[in-house]
Amino acid sequence: MITPGLEPHLCPVCCTQAKALDVVDFNKNCEEKTGIFLPMSGKPVYYFHCPNCAFTFAPELMAWSKEQFEENIYNDEYALVDPDYLEKRPAHNANEIFNTFSPFYTNPRHLDYGGGNGLMSKLIGEKGWNSTSYDPFVNTDVNPADLGKFDFITAFEIFEHVCDVNHLIKSLTSFMHPQSVVLFSTYVSDNDIKPNQRLNWWYASPRNGHISLFSKKSLTLLAESVNLKFGSFNPVAHYFCYTKPEWIKN
Image 1 (cartoon, one colour):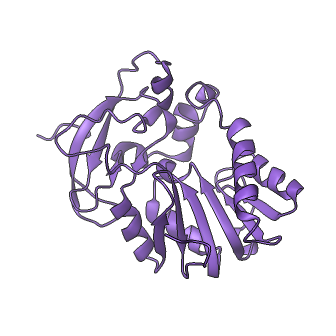
Image 2 (cartoon, rainbow, N blue to C red):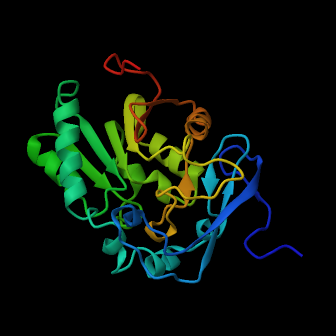
């Protein structure tokens, strides 16, 4: 008899048989690294690890409905485990993006994918960019096909939250033309998750909704599945593109 939660699962990225890695309490959260610990919930969350591409994921949470996520994760207490998400992070990202990439783009069509309340896009728009925010969970009255194509797409703190990684990459490509660049952020797990070792990595935090944890290989394979190139600027900032522009040196 198989223990509930340990049923076999295929890797969503490369379809290899994944192996159970570890179990953590549902209330494990990213703010623990700053000394903020929530009471134990008593709810086990099992993470699986792919031996081929090193993608790590929580199958049970991936199967949740939108309503379950809103009730259990993205609720009124979410700010306890991610206090910067409403204002501080969007403002910081807006300044960083504008200051870093304005030398390469003159009034580009910019899309902030998964932009939540739209603050980052609003702030970049005030600086002069033609910016749009689209969040599938927020802008439910918007038909994404009506938005068109964009020169520069940002997707910050999105990848680790998604249930369907293949839908995500296909959705991003629907907004791209041949010269588009997608800049996205997610910490890669290459030096932090290993088979037969406890899952102690701070980023593996179900209370934050971190259910998809990527290695560089899994991001490379995901890109190749839709004919994109993948590269990294550092362990958290990465890009997808069809044709690498001259300003990307790595």
